[in-house]
Image (cartoon, rainbow, N blue to C red; front, side, top):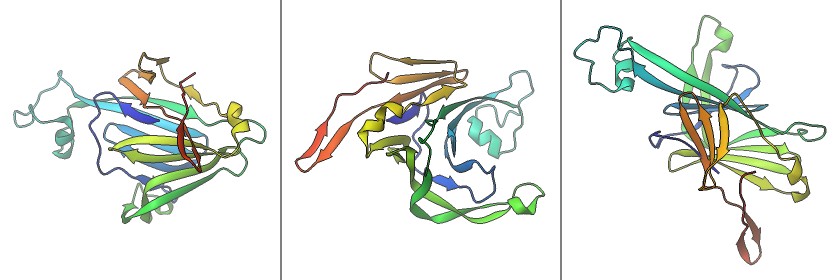
Length: 219
């Protein structure tokens, strides 16, 4: 299942940033994909989708008028409007469903981040790890989630070790304006700043004879 905001450019340098204490305790990782930030928390995935526009009511320096918004920010131009929308894909909850949930970063990059935010030195963190892949073990009892990047876009797999628990694997979406399934069997998340597509859904089963494709759809 891949996630792609409409009109979002491909990001070829995406990674998951670990939380070593620079953010709230319930945040485990986050990733930034141009106009989309995804926070991986203990309760679910929080999507912050935003766009930057020019404030036409203010005076614009002629040197900046035709620059892309991202370049204007780096150049110190302040006459812009930031519009955003946040929604959550909540993990399954219920007795026995969330026991032993564990977040593991994989394929660690040689680079790292340093965070020096605010005046509270306890939030200053060095050598914060960057990972190309993330696994959430027991997102639901007997089911793991794997998050990674494919062609620069975020994708996730659900790995079933005990298929009898599949009925308990239900995600709760909150904060979005609408949720529909289009004629291409893609799930469309409507927000105030644009749509995000959960698409390219596939299911298969591995066996000694190879990979068997299983028909699937959103429900």
